[in-house]
Length: 81
Ligand SMILES: [Zn+2]
Image (tube, rainbow, N blue to C red; front, side, top):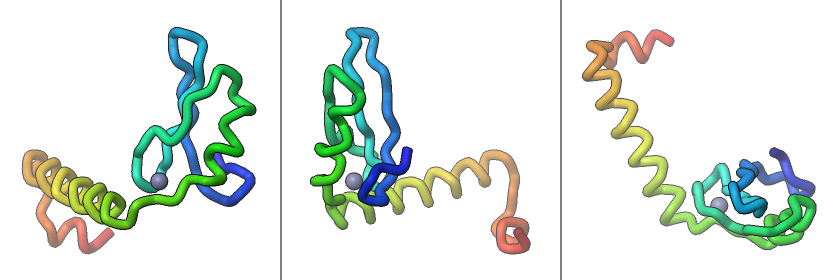
């Protein structure tokens, strides 16, 4: 969900009725509220930690490389796409 400050957040509805907001940049849960509309101002104040964003990016890159390796997809094939 694109919030009013132009950042993307995923909203998760918990079984206890609360709503979580998860940053799509760093994947942290940045806010929890009883009403979904209460998440927006909390999201606005979130700033991703650049170190965490780098770590998440590196982890995703390694996970994709491992998946491609396990599926037998070569790097050359990835580069053509
Ligand atoms: Zn973030």
